Amino acid sequence: MRIFRARLVIPSAGSEPILDGCVAISADRIAAVGPFEEIRTRFTGGEVIDLRHAVILPGLVNAHQHGRGISPLLLGYQDDALEPWIAARRRHGPPDVYAVTRLAAEEMLANGVTATLHANYNYGSDYRQELDTTVRAYSDAGLRATICIGYQDRGFLAYGNEAEFVATLPEDARKALHSRGAPPYAGSVAETIGLMDEMSARFEDTPLISFAYGPAGPQWVSDEAWAALARDAAKRGIGLHFHLLESPLQADWCRKAFGGSTLAHLRRLGVFEAAASCAHGVYMSEEDMTLAREEAVVVVANPGSNLRLFNGPPPAAELHRRGCVVAVGTDNTALADDEDYLAELRLYASLARSPGVEAIGPSPVDILRTATTSGGKAAFLPAGYGSLAPDQPADLVAIDCAGFEAPDGSMAKNPLSLLLARAKGTDVALTMTAGVVRYARRDQDLERRIHWRRVATASVGKRELRQDGTTVAAIQQALRGRRREA
Ligand SMILES: [Zn+2]
Image 1 (cartoon, rainbow, N blue to C red):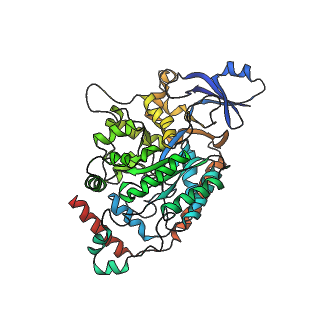
Image 2: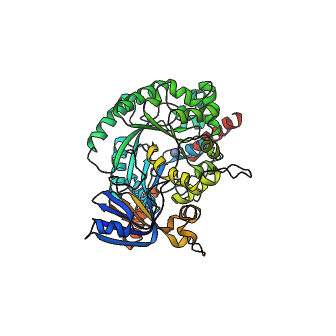
Image 3: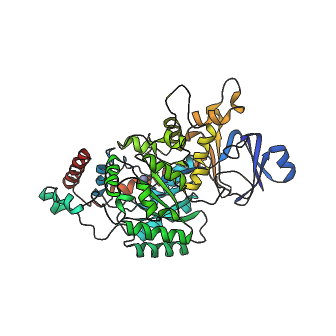
């Protein structure tokens, strides 16, 4: 038994902070949470770890990211409108997938994140291998991860009629267009389901790792595939996570293709027979938001990514006002191009404040819920994930109080609002998953990150060149033309 004693323990969103509190941990589970004096008498002989300079909270959940430990910006893809930005990635083959994913996991742990949803991603090499490597990277780092098995069967170059789009490219670009040897991800729906069988069986006993389906998004996946993947997800009792209405071009295409609400279309296909969460939702209509609430679809806001990629802010205030369940992700494109989850959460909280003298917006408790239990729902983790309670997994974060100590000593009375207003990733003193301390500002923690950053960075320079710059520029220009028309 180990007893982690803190200046304050906030067991969950909505529960009272416990002054001089502690969390007792037995193996990978929480045994008890309460005032230190009381718990110590229950577990005499337990080892006491003193964190009285810190507040203990449930671990934070990064509910949408892609394991890109080296950010797209550092990979050489400048911030741009979403579609040309995605097209830029055609230039190169994969870096060292293990190293970049491992680095992403280490960065998240250092920023207080204990669980993440790894959204669909394929570097264009063997997908089975990439997934295998991804599982190992999260598992070795000790970050809890729900890994999406991706799927896409259309919209590779542009949304809608691709042949028509290719015909608009200059002749040289058409000739030089790198033909994809194989479709992305596993291939067909049957192969995707087969890969889910294989991965779930192979990693059944791997702690911290679970799987979900990741159909890329409505403009990228056919109706038949949506229906088939949702049916299979419902049968297995797993979730389905997708990108939704992220850019103006996607919004325009979906409106024309589905004749109204995109979520209404997905509902007709039976998508919500399975648990579902979606990322972005920047262009959700009123009907989309109503349906998200009715169907318990968790919306994962990625505010830094949305602002940087010229999509505008997510409708955070409106989602909050309508009572939708919202979580937050960094999308590996956070505002300061880092993995500072607390900063991203703060950006979300600010965007969720409606202008006006009534001061309407989420409370600190609402924001903590967004970062914890709602994140757990978005990542399809078992019920109760995101609260420190007996029998829950021992996933927690301790945040140094020095950064948000008020001179009048009011911190203890008002800890959550001060913490959410001021705490940064660098204030994280300790991150634990499944009862194991994964990060604690020790030399070894810093060295481990430096090591993986070095390995990942070295591999970036060795990437295979897939497509010449002139052709990519021609594709980008044609996409910008579409964007202007939209
Ligand atoms: Zn994403």
